[in-house]
Image 1 (cartoon, rainbow, N blue to C red):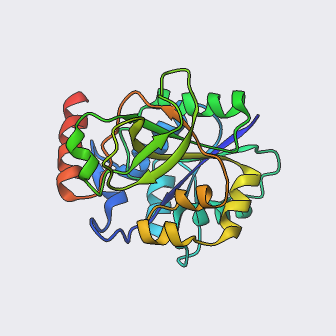
Image 2 (cartoon, one colour; image 1 turned 135 degrees about the vertical axis):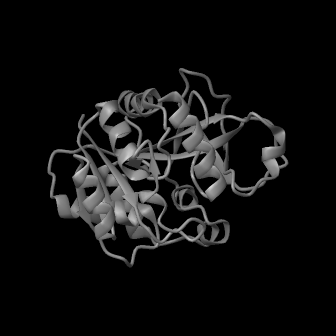
Length: 243
């Protein structure tokens, strides 16, 4: 089976404007993510963006980018447009990586892809063990509850995605990476946003609301996503120290 990785990215993030082009070790965040995806070596990688500056940056750093509409409500819609524009015929799986996680673990990407192939799943994602129970109440940390307890071999079905939870059983920190079969991606974007999705600001609920099963693989850890300037400075410090 052939996988194509598409990374949606845009400059107009509300909490940290211009985020994809902020630099760590003299390389933009979006180009770091592109390189991680390439190192995973599961197939071709493309950045899908509405901003010429992002496309220029990715191409300048040896990557590949495609321009998409500014009208998309979600990253998945952007990915679908990119797939149509690329006109690739023989791709079975689409890996959707977040453009603001430059420290994503490469092994986790490889593992998700392997599990999608071996289980013939329609849609898959990653989750990590909760380190701090106080995170159950933090809205910016998305949680997923699963049918069964997650271990390195399991690929359990997601029961729900939520921003706050009183639950403790089978609850994990959701990592916003998705892998879909090309048919599932097409079906998903044609559905339109569900009430549940809009209220909770979680597009994965559209899948569950329409009986699309989402399987969850256990990630080695939660990568630091960059939502605020504090996140950026904290991750910059860690990555520059490691380099």
